[in-house]
Image (cartoon, rainbow, N blue to C red):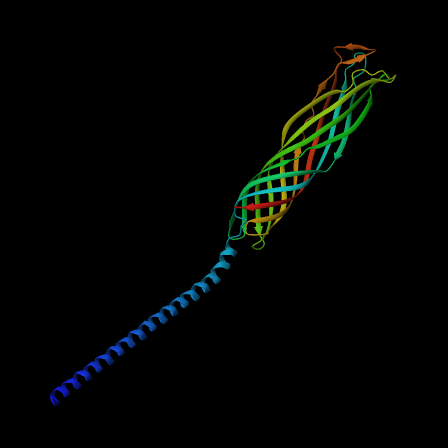
Length: 300
């Protein structure tokens, strides 16, 4: 009986020890799992803080190192064109029996015209602050200039009235753009390149006698063609966002000396036509334009 009792007590103590050991193991497992989870969280937050610190350091640097003036760009502009065109011509009279007469017409006309403008280009930035670019430019407008009527007396019976008309419409240019960044958002630049202007040149010539009998009147001649000139300009551009900018630009174009057409006209006298009598007008121009343009650009 005592033997069985001691055996039971021994088994009970053994089970109790085993239970205690298992509890210790479970506690250690829990502690280990908690430590692992805590360590994982610490690693996660540490990595998160490091990443945020890296981004806070690198993003401003990227923003400063990548100005949006670089790359392909398209712009639209609205501006005021102020052409300054002067004309000087010679009129010759070949009426039989009348001495040849040569005289000059000199006129100057200045008007202002609102024009629209589109431009496509590409820019590169060197050494962080110097810009070089190429662009194609198209200006659309219709500037009609009239120089007024000029009346010249050929002889006591014959007078001639002329009126020169000049229209400068669409203009196209290829431009080299050179600039310098003052800061990350401000650019000062210059422009130079060839420009082609569509000139329509003509005049009206009226002939009449002092006694009031009109002979050949309103003889009209015109000539339309593109004249090449040279454009130079300066501008200032400011980035409103990373890809949109606003610029104020001034350009000057010199078109040289476009030629008015020469015209031969039969002159009648006393109501009869004189076939071999001709009247010739040959006029030359000096054409210049000034443009002030407000431009909105988008950089790709």
